[in-house]
Image (tube, rainbow, N blue to C red; front, side, top):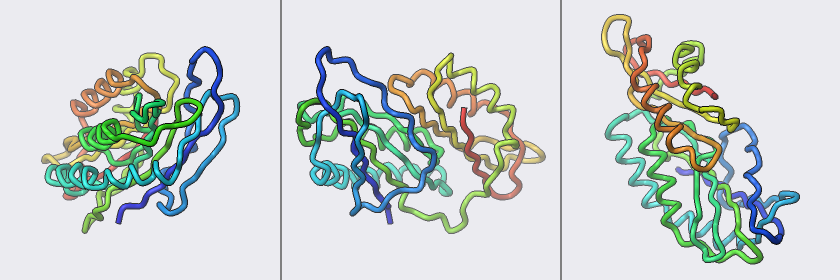
Length: 232
């Protein structure tokens, strides 16, 4: 069962059109139950208001697409699991201006992109008084019969130090999750990797991290895949 949560950031319209950056997300990935949307005020923002029930209905209409994203991913890595927290900026015409992941423990770039792309194609209710900013929490519905073994971040310390160089001076919070599978002997191999970059326009940085992690040397997890999440 997919657990859902909706958070709205509501403010006022100001002259000039400059956009305040999204507030730093609260750490944690536990999704909120769908029938209790969370609405919060953000001080000194330049935002309009949007109908939370209608907005939540739009997200629920994306469930078939989200399901397809997940089913495709599980055919490649059958131990995938995790939560996503998606941030979207909605223009006055109801169309998303941009969207990105505030958090994700899914650990698969293609799947995460599939979710975000689905949101970008959606048509939302028109905000009043300015753009609206929405946070939507969801998760992969499938529960692996045997989940991946949890690894501490120390097991991939070499990856963390190298991946950090991809941020290129960005001060945003980046959350990286990867799965490691057995390859033979003492060596393992990266099965998949995902990145939640809590800022807009981070595609090149995310791609750099994904490439670097995929090419990294990792220890073997033994006979069963392992999963590790760390922050940059």
